[in-house]
Image (cartoon, rainbow, N blue to C red; front, side, top):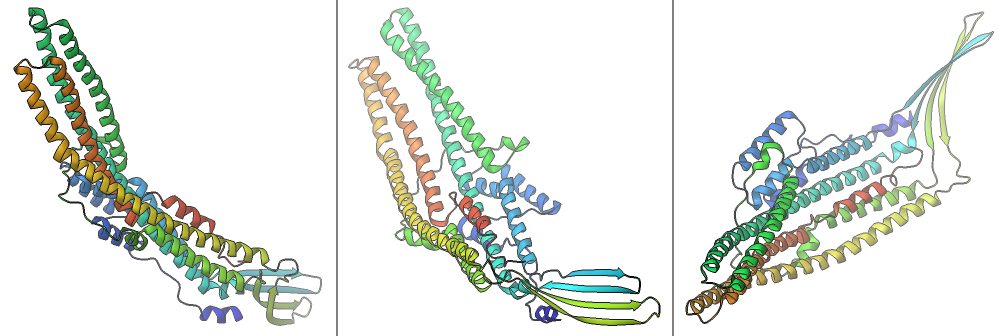
Length: 468
C-alpha cells in the first residue's frame, strides 16, 4: 500500500516527442546554416529526402547546395540522429516507475496447505523517480545538442570539401591551358631549330618548360581526383550521383570582409559544445545531490504479503496479510565511495567546462586572425600580384619582339606567371576554408562531439540510486 501511495504522488510519465527530439537541431541548422535537416525514419521520409537530393544534384553545385545535400544524404549524420532517438527512449524509460515483482509460493505438509502471495516494490526507486526523470531529461537535451553539433560538423566538412575540390579542379584547368600552350610553343621551337632560326639551347629550354608543366599537370589532376573523392564522402553520394557537376572557379572574394568585433563573445554564447558542457554540469550537479541524499541507503523495498492456510483433514482455512519492509543495514558501506565518485565527476565537468571556455575564446581569436590574413593575402593577389605579372609579361614580349631579351627571359617569366596564378587560386581557397573555420569556431562543429559523447557515457552510471 505504501508503494501504491507513493506511486500516486509521482508526476506523469514522459512521452515521445512528435519530431523525435529534432527541434533543437532543426532550429540551429535553420538559424546558423539556413538549411533543412531531417531524421529519416520511414520510407516516405527517405523518398522525400531522395527527391530533394536528386533536384539539387541536377544543378551545378555551390557551397550551400553541397551542405544541403550532405545534411540530407550523409548516413553518418543519420546515425547521429539515431543516437538521439535512443536517448529519447532512455528518457521515457527513466520516467517510468520500477516494475513491481510478484511471487507465489505453495507449501504442502501432512496437515495443511500454505499458499503465500507477495507483491514487492522498490520504494527507493519510487522516491527518487522525479529526480532521475529530471536527470534523464537533461541527458536527452544534451543528446539534442550533440546531434546539432554533429550537424554543424558535417556541414563544415562538406563546405570545406567543396572549396578544396573546386580549387583543385581550377588549378588543374590552369595547368592544362599552360601545358597546351607550352606544347604548341615547344613544337614551334623544334621546327625553328630544324630550320636554323633558333639555337639548340633555347629549344631545349622550351622543351624543358613543357615537360615540367606536363609533370605538374599529372600531379594536379591526381589532387583534383582526390579532393573530389573527399567531397563525395562528405556528401554521402554514390552510383549515378557521382556525376555531379562542380563550378569551374571558386567564388570571388567579398568586397570587404565582415567585421566581427565580438567574435570571442559570440563564441562563448553560440558554441554548441559549450552548451553541451554546461548541460552536463547541470545534470551532474543534480546527480551529485541525489547521490548525497541516498548515500546511506542501498536497498529499500516494501512488500505486501497475503498468506492462506488450509487444514487437510477439516478443510478449515485461515487468511493472513501484512507488510514487509526491507532496508539494507549500511554496516560496511556508508556510501562514501559513491559520494566521492559523484563529487569528483562533478568537479571534472567543472574543470572541463572552464577549459573549453578558454579554448573557445582562443580558437575564435585564432580563426578570426586567420580569416583576416587569408582575405588580405587573396586580395593582394587579385588586386596587385596578377595585374603586375600581366604587365611584366606584356613588357617582356615587347622587348623580345625588339630583340632586347632572349627566349630564356620569356620562359622564366612564363614559369613565374603560372606560379602566380596557381598561388592566387590557393590563396582564394585558403580564404574560403578560413571562412568555414571561423564559422565553426563561433558556433561549433569542429570536432568536439567525441568529447561530449565520452563524457555522457562516463556519467551514465552516476545518477542511478543504488539498489535499483
